[in-house]
Each structure stands twice: as structure tokens, then as C-alpha cells.
Amino acid sequence: MLSIQDNTNTPTLYLSLDHLQIKSAEKTLVHDLSFKLHAGETLAIVGESGSGKSVSCLALFGLLAKNLQLQGQVYFHRQAHLASQDLSSQVGTVDRQIRVRRIAMIFQEPMTALNPLHRVEKILAESLRLVGCTNKDEIKQRSLVLLNEVGLEQAEDKLSRFPHELSGGQRQRVMIAAALALEPDILIADEPTTALDVTLQAQILDLLQRLQQQHQMAMVLISHDLQLVRRYADQVIVMQQGQVIEQGAVQTIFEHAQHDYTRVLLEHDFGECEAESDQASLLLDIKQLSVRYPIRAGVFNRVKAWHTAVEALNLSLNVAQSIGIVGESGSGKSSFALAVARLIQSQGEIIFSGHDLNHLTAQQLAPMRQSFQIVFQDPLSSLNPRMSVAEIIAEGLQRQHGDRHRVQAKVDHVLQQVELTTAFKHRYPHELSGGQRQRVALARALILQPKLLILDEPTSALDRTTQRAIVRLLRKLQTKYQMSYLFISHDLHVVRALCHQVMVLKNGQVVEFKETSELFQHAEHAYTQQLIAASQYEKINASIN
Image 1 (cartoon, rainbow, N blue to C red):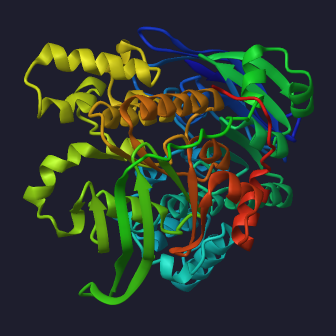
Image 2: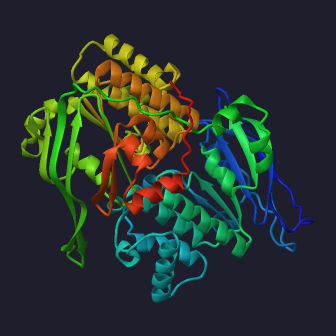
Image 3: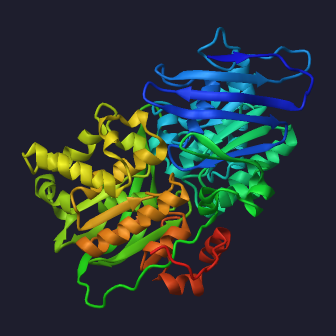
């Protein structure tokens, strides 16, 4: 169990963790993790999916599963006249003021972390009341300030929205605002910019850095992106399979990396997409597609206005072609994907293999769904928590094949394709890391061998090594099965490596649509130029093929 000791000799030392170990019945998840965190300092923990990054920080909150055992010591250093407090719910009585106010956490998956029954205003009010805001007008004004600080446009309108009415990036910003409302001494940010575009990533991290300096707040930044860490962190811990393989100052790690795995994480080149065939036939033809959402208000929840998420979009996709869809959070990327998959209503024509999907009944559409699959942005909310990994992946295939042994063989094969062992078959979604859940979601789609695969941020929660593996896998599958991809992402490195063409969306409108190489070399629109500049893309001749 975690034990706690008092140490008030160093008032600027906020948190220290000594020899933390986390074990399950099968294996040790975290081996001997130790660090010190001072006021105004940022400690980054980086590593591949499943390396123990998130579970280490959850241990500080007492949020681990009951079947996990903890060993080690945690020291919390507040003001000199206050005693240290235990941070683990497994040990004695927990000081609520420390757990709730002094340490705040931004979780990796906002859709599951935000209460789906509460509007944004109520979500923020819960945090603000903990810091003494009780007046309704004061809470509203403070909420608007917080939303503006995290870059959420039309903040007053967003206060009345539910989480499902926001984009992935907007949900993540709401969660960041709720954490900042607590004015914590220590902020634990678990992949805080995963669902954000490159320009907003910098804005959010600049904001956190500024608030850090103003309030002498300490931060633990969990990330798989070492290039992002380089700019914002002071200290770095590199983890692999639960073990610390390197630890030290940012400059030392980046300039004198000792471990091969660290050097792999530092490499950000993905190569470039191969030219498409000139003989390819048309698979998908989209004409004047538009998506609108009703904005409801009042006691009777009546529609008071309409929000246009996608406006008059045209697109043609050939067999074995990949088109990247990029743009800021809330630009309409995910709405476009859901409309093409016929999961939300839209206007216009979606002609797939000669059939207009918008004019098919549910009964007519059902047998065609195998031919187009979607990988959702938030894997945890899209996976059935009551089903094992094997059941999730096999669900679609079992509707077609009654042979149980054949289905299981295909499940084993597709797990290997997404670099998961067959041991994962018996696990449930809550037992997986964010990156592992994303690979399960990809396996569920791939097992049906669709003609069209719609990928909504499929690599956002994955480390660079796994991202390269997924890019290689998608290229291989495209060549083998002649699949076509609509690839939605804010990571321009991955887009350049996988996509033949790129469409840039802003506020639901297409601002630029070109061949990938042409776009990166001769971007015309100011917003496209801003995205490319923010990604700090460097052309390197090396290839991952």
C-alpha cells in the first residue's frame, strides 16, 4: 500500500513519488517510479500506449481498480504549517480539499469524463462552487471567462450545450476549463491536446504554461508526443512497458538520448504517400453535402435556430485512394464523417458504388454497411463495456458466418495486424489503455474488409512508433484489398504519409482541396498556411516503408 510522510522543509516542492509499483494478479504494470515536482515546473511522462503513464497518475487519485496493488510512498507538500496528506483512497481518510482542489486532472477521453446529462454551464458550476463561487451571475461570468481562455468560440452559446452536442476538441476544452476552475496547485494533464488541431494545441499549452507562471502551479503532462514535450516540459520521464528507461532534464534527453526507444520517439518522419493509380475507378461521389444541427432552448426544448456544421461540400474518392480531411476543432470534420456513414441526417447526394445512400431506407442500407466502416474518434464510448475484445471485434462478422472457429481465427489475425496479442481477446475496454482501445476499434472495422474506411482521428492517442505501424498497416491493406480511406486528422505528418489528396475545412466550408504534395508546397489559403506552419513539418528523405 502507499504510505504518506510529512516533509515541509522545502515549501516549493509540491509532490514527490518514491518507488511506486502497481501490480495486478498477472503482472507488474509500473516498476519503481520516482519523481519530484516543484512549483511552476512541468514534468512530462511519455511512452507508448500501455506503458504505465496514465495508471501512475490515477494512483495519486485513488482511482485504480480494486484488483491492483500499490506499493511506494507519496509526499504532498503544501504550506509549511500544514501536514502532508495521503492521496490514495486505499489508505485511511482522504483530505477532500487536496483531492478535489489542490490536485486536478484532465482526463484523456472527454466524452466519458463529462457528465452526459449536464449542460456545460452546470459542469463548470460544479468546479466553481468548490472554490467558493455561489452567486449564479458570478458563476456564469466566470464560466464565460474560462471558456474564452481555452479558446472556445461563441462561449455563451456553448454554455447551454450538452457534451454530445460538441466536437471532440470542444469537449476537451470544456474539461480543461473545468480543471482550471479549481485553481489547483498541481494539474495532471493526460493527453490534454489529443483531439485538438495543431494550432489549438499550441494555444492550450501556452495557456497552461501562462497560468502555471501566474499561479506557480506544477503540472504533470502525459503525452506520447516528444516533440510537443520538448517545448513545454522541464523534466522528462520515458516509460516503456511500465519501466522507466530514461529520466532527466528535457535538454539532456533530447540532445543525449541513451535508449534506442527514446530515439525512435524523437523521430517524427512518416515518409510520403505513394502516387495513386491513374486507372482507378470512382467509389464515392459526394455532391452538395450539408449537415445542420438544431439548437434547442427553453422549458419545452424547442428549436430556436440551426447550426450549419458542413456546408455544400463536394468530393470524389476513387478505389484505393485516400483523402485527408483536416481542420480545426469544430470545423465539421466529424459531422462530415458521420453523414457519409449515414449515422446522422444530411442533405445532398452520397453516391457509393452507384447507390445514393441518402435515398436508401434502413432496410436497403443494412446489407451495404459491411462495405463502409467507421473508426470513431473516442474509442471508449464506441466500444460496448459489457463485451470482451473478442466479442467486440467479431460482432459484425458473426452476422455473416456461423462458423465459430473461422470467426475466432479471423479475430486472431486482425489483432496481430493492429499489433495486439491474442491475450487481449479476453479483456474488456476499461482494462485497456487509450491507445489499445483505439487499435481494437480499428480491428473491429478492418475484420469486415470494407471498400471504404472512414477514420476519425484513428492515431490521435497513439505513440509515434504505433502511429508508424498503423500507417504501414493501412498502406498494406489498401494495396492488398484496394480499400479507400477518408482520413480525418489534425496530425499533418500522418496525413502527408497516408493521403493522396487533402481537403481543408474551416467553419464547415472547404477552403482548400489539392493533391497532398501540392498543398504542402504551395498552400494558397492563409488558414492552410497557418496549419502547416504550426505543425513545424520538416521534409526528410527517410521513409518508413
